Amino acid sequence: MTFIQTPPELGNQYTADRALRSYLARALPADVLTEIGPGLEAMGELAGGELYRFQLADRANEPTLTQWDAWGSRVDRVEVSPLWHRAERIAAEQGLVATAYERRHGAYSRVHQFVLVYLFTPSADLYSCPLAMTDGAARALIAAGNAALIERALPHLTSRDPREFWTSGQWMTEATGGSDVGLTETVARREGERWRLYGRKWFTSAATSQMALTLARPDGNPPGGKGLALFYVETRDAEGRPNRILVNRLKDKLGTRKVPTAELTLDGTPAELVAGTGDGVKNIAPMLNVTRTWNSVAACALARRGLALARDYAGKRVAFGASLSEKPLHLDTLAGLEAEFLGALHLTFFVVELMGREEAGKASSEQKNLLRLLTPVAKLLTGRQVVHILSEVIESFGGAGYVEDTGLPMLLRDAQVLPIWEGTTNVLSLETLRALEGVGGLAVLKREIGIWLREVREPDLVKISAQVERAVEQAEAWLAKAQGDALEAGARRFAMTLGRAVELALLAQHGQWSLAEEKDQHARAAALRFAAHGVSLLAEMDAADSRRLARDD
Ligand code: MFK
Image (cartoon, rainbow, N blue to C red; front, side, top):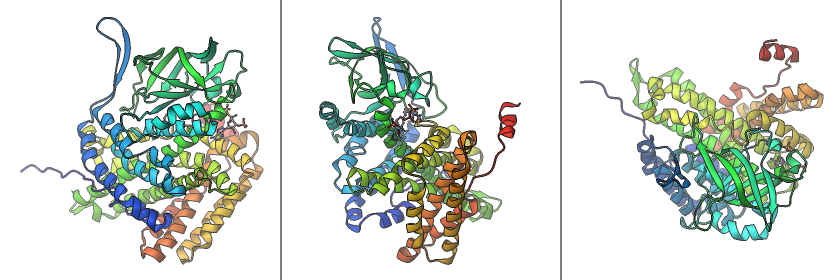
């Protein structure tokens, strides 16, 4: 009889997630957890069961673009995969955006929302992308205080009724640059009573959204980000036709293949100013901070999915006389990945907690500063961690991980977008330096880390605390000394060091709590393993050598 390998399976993705449940037990008041628990369990069941099976069956379906109808009219219809239709309904009904705005649990509402998002994301083929932009648009409209647009769009963006629910695009990237947005070429002209936009948007995610926030330069404005204005666009007119928007083509991408990313021409698209005729980059920043946090949550979610499958498979796969889950080297490999994942999870949800406090009006000025500083740090670090973790997860399946219809390669390809969109690792490292200036340096972070580490008693974890403190001091010393090109060249090592220090400090704090409250060694073990991987990445690099190596000088 030919051998047939039993495939990996998923159970309820909430009840089976020991680390998430342990985190929530510490972070949320018991009554809040009791109230939201059944909803999380239902989402975990859906994501590990019906939706996961649907996702595997729907694997080959990708979005399509029909530009012309049979009679020669330009229609530019984008059709998405069946799973995306289902995901849209689930997202509305389960309040994946709404939960944050209904604020039923005050400052904890963001944690509630993002746990739902975390459970949903890995089974939803990056439908989280339009949801992230929707959440970001809602936040940017509120921040701008534009009463008319808030009244018009917010009820749709935060609706739980699938018939009313809108998603939003975030059209920033042009051919001139995805990072240097100040180079935007799209112009805005005042024609009669309204603004119209002319230009080409080079990378617009989720082209099926009902609205978008976008940047354009009002005629006569100066170059750069300050000369841009933030505009609100509805993508269809009253008859449902494209609103002077041409979909040139869908992008043929490495991953996120279910996301209908499009090149658009704006050919007199009617638009409304969101917040004055300038400062576009500044006005879209609240949206960026929200989508960057979704990015961090998605990184954790995809990493967790890969590890859940790898762990299950290790129990089923037999090689060299024993199951992989009995093999010391296989276990050692998975343990290292789990520790990195847990670091990412704790950093991400700490940022989410801060965001919830800020929105509920409960954040101190120190907490606001921490949020400003750690949003880019979490995004850049978790984006790199998830790619590393999923690359190893694929390898842990051997050849099966390389075969498309296992559904595994898609995980790695989708994860690879997370360090790219919403600001690459390097762009966010530089953003971290700017954010530091705005919050008055590292003092606020050092104080917070000190508070966490003060609770640590267990001798192994106390040693880790010293390692964290050394890394932060080293980062501070480097920052005080580095200037000009050296500062820029080291920005990534610096930002990653900060992020790793925060992750390890949170792991140590949680490890201590979990030992005391849950009699559980899991978080302590994660802290020790993470510490062994190292925290500080800082090193003196010779600029001339870098040029030699990078440019082949
Ligand atoms: C599931 C995952 C979900 C993810 C969904 C994603 C969907 C995909 C959609 C996209 O990918 S959209 C493209 C995303 N693009 C980016 O994220 C752009 C990356 N580039 C940067 O972030 C650049 O650093 C930046 C465009 C901001 C540089 O432009 P500028 O014009 O040089 O901006 P500058 O001078 O740094 O900042 C202008 C102002 O905004 C400053 O305020 P002041 O004028 O008062 O000095 C900044 O402080 C402020 N600002 C910038 N970034 C901010 C911010 N304020 C708060 N938070 C921020 N993050």
